[in-house]
Image 1 (cartoon, rainbow, N blue to C red):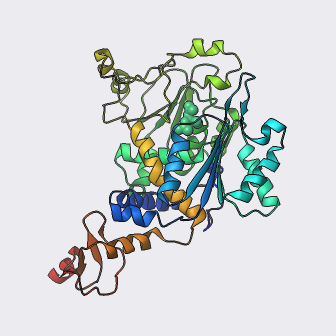
Image 2 (tube, helix red, strand yellow; image 1 turned 60 degrees about the vertical axis):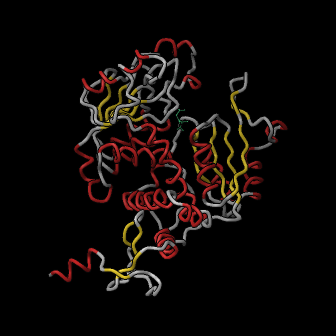
Image 3 (tube, rainbow, N blue to C red; image 1 turned 180 degrees about the vertical axis):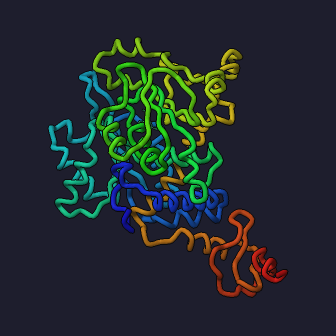
Length: 401
Ligand code: NCD
């Protein structure tokens, strides 16, 4: 991947180098978010920027985690949200779509007002078309694909990778090759799930994980995806029954895309991933992009008032990382927005600035600084006479030699 990230449209854009950098920056942001001074520094990354979030389709996690990420970087967010109408079409009811406007003109309008566009469309490929039109007419406005119909959901893939590594207790830089010894199973709606479509490419192509698509007949992974995995010699299998795997990536039945609504009744409760299922198939990590469906029943919830749920739900089980998936979305999306809008600011230098501002200690020999939250800085900082001076662990070790 090139030096500067211009848009985020597809998970095909990612490579190992990018994932490692993002992983490190996300960890730095997570740590900075833990303290007031850290939060203040982060909010100085995008002051004065205005981000446009335009979502044709409903969203709880992606929409709010981007809004929170932008806000925490000091940017303002303006949003426009649509929903599915009786006609079966997703519609932005307060936009000029009502007046029969061209999509292309709408995109050029938003690009004239905002510094970055985060788009969720109902149609596959439409976010790519927005980029095409903006590039054609030389708008220097980054675009993020927050889900384009049944196409892709690349930023979800990034936080999924992060949570998967966390669940397996692996460090991306040191351990990424170990991932090929684990398998990932995608469960339920492999046909319409854009989160599966994007994640399968990264887990299969970059991490060489063996993949298993477990879907009821009729909801199998699309042929175009499987052809692409074939071309990259990814090892995958297709089945309609649960089987052993290291990671279970469970999805909802996306009935909004079903041609025949009756199909939902046929498929619901086809798979129900419980503690017993995870035990039986030796599952180490259970993921779900959410929302999980009340009616679909693919991942039972734990309810305080209902003891029967306590016997089956994975919500309190350490193998479940679906709430971690959600949480990590904010620092990770903060890193992405920084790459797109303030690419030349190094997060590491922000970390140094934080260290400089926080009253800690400095190594008398190498001049690095230490804070309890962030540990020792990577680079030396000019001598700060007001700080206590000690020997850092590295210099102590050298001295002992
Ligand atoms: C998903 C989506 O919208 O693609 N959720 C998400 O963004 N985290 C999955 C879904 O709607 O089932």
